[in-house]
Image (cartoon, rainbow, N blue to C red):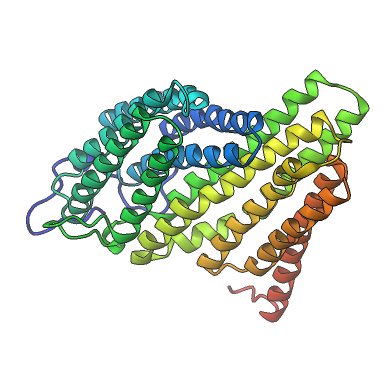
Length: 404
């Protein structure tokens, strides 16, 4: 049930989600997610066209801004009911804004910078102001959203300033937008006279947030399969088919690493109580975009694998073929560590091994396919380690009683 304070009850209780266990994702939220299939494709193509350190940095900045739009919309959906007409209308407008963001993304550091920044600012401020109106009368959430509006308005204005200037100042300012937002969230959006927002007051339904972020991971993995499938149709021969199978196996391995324990993670967050706000802030706002970035980089590597499996890997190839899975495993290791779900050591070790293999692969002029095979074997090693650990844990608990 929604909390109410002595100073009154929520003015729009029909717009607030009830708390009845894990709230399932609605069709409106899934429709919103569809736009991000296109967004992830745009990010992958952007990095593929400019595959150097500068391109990687710009891609990271764009992913950070896109992620802020998506994750804050997901947080709003954690408190509001997307099946109610006012909430649905705003969510559809945010969907439209997200589509415009994705369309402007390739030229975000060029002629489309102001368009990208303007849409970003409009979506972030508009959605937050609507949410503040929708939860009026809800004492703790109302305070949180008033503080959040101040910070979001400031970062939105900063983003527009970035759109008005040329590079490299634009990169610096947009990095500042992401950093200021991260600091604001970490400190509870402190505002003089209003105080700060405590995570234990956020009334988070952690299981719902976990399910929503799982959906985004699936979107990113699906985009990787779309890229490899599209490349395969243009070069349908035995060598390309073999490369496609290797790329597909890599996607399956990343999927397995993440989703093998997804239900356990959802249970942990669903039962976290007042700790759910702080845990969700860390694992969803900060750690999940690291995993998504790893998948995006890996998708670029898969495209290179299908186009030239026999070419020497080179530093750019090592960055995507081995660095992508390493980035994903690092993010997931931190995710598992925070939730104390086990497996973090194996993931960190695998990430270090992949990074150590990169200079060796470049020095030996290993073919792209060999580098991809090494990444797959290391990731499968993580899966095997998980299975062994689970088996040992089951044996240490002894036989399961039929009464339990």
